[in-house]
Length: 80
Image 1 (cartoon, rainbow, N blue to C red):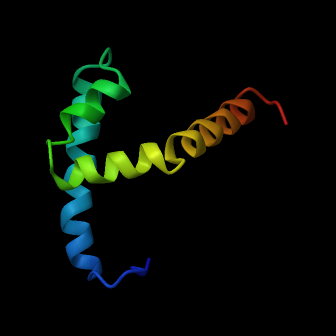
Image 2 (image 1 turned 135 degrees about the vertical axis):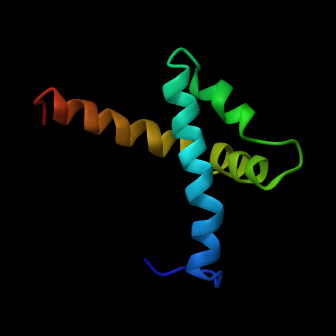
Image 3 (image 1 turned 90 degrees about the vertical axis):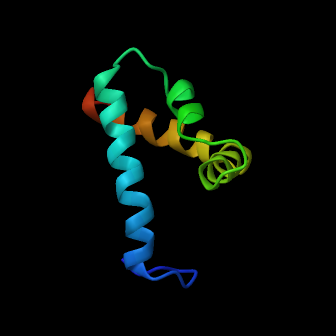
């Protein structure tokens, strides 16, 4: 997948892969942790992750994810 903004793919991978790996590990280690708790844990005040989370929350990311997951659930349940 090509980067749209100009960051080398290897640098983007170096940032994102460990982030999502650790996030997945934390979610598996504590299945009772909410998405909100995990989001806060991975969003250092003033850091890059907080910036991304804020943009995600304020620019429709949550609604898009909710809609997509709803469609996935419908598909799993055999609904159109």
